[in-house]
Amino acid sequence: MRKAIVALAITGVAWLATATPALAHNVLISSDPAKGASLAAGPAKITLTFDQYVQNANVNQIAVVGPGGGQWAEGQVEVRDSVVTVPLRPLGPAGEYKIGYRILSADGHAVTGEVPFTLTAAGTGTPASADAARSNAGQAETAPATGGEGSSGVPIWVWIAGAVVLLAVGLTVALRTGAGDKEKSGS
Image 1 (cartoon, rainbow, N blue to C red):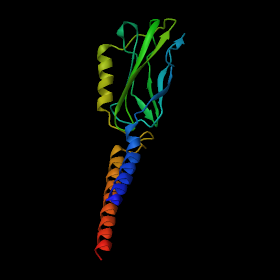
Image 2 (cartoon, rainbow, N blue to C red; image 1 turned 60 degrees about the vertical axis):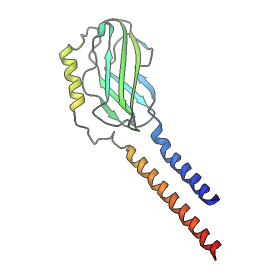
Image 3 (tube, rainbow, N blue to C red; image 1 turned 135 degrees about the vertical axis):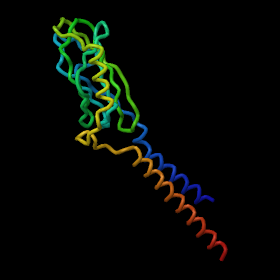
């Protein structure tokens, strides 16, 4: 009985050790422009850097909403390992802009957040029309996932399969050890 409990404990620890990477969601570690930054001129693109690999999936989105609700992001979201970028239209009115993002984390979960920054001097740009903003969103949803540099992470199913194999090995060892003890005590 004691050996079975020890084997079960070892199996549980092994299962938790392999499941740990699957439990950690990506965390935004930096952005350009930085959170709360005051800029005299608008950037050409938004760059978000995460602590882990971001899956290069067609569900990753970055939106930049300015004063009055206009959409300023323009073009496809690009993923390279843990860095996500999107080009911007030239910014317009001075005021607060918000970068909203939704990315597919290394563990397969969606991670969302918001990064505000302020444009201190008005630019000459105009926001995307409602039709153009919808068109860009549609392109992001229908674009095929590429197998480029950003798709080198370990899929979640590998961690699950590893945990199942470790569990099976632990149970097999426990059962064989218990059967060997019964044979020895029976002789």
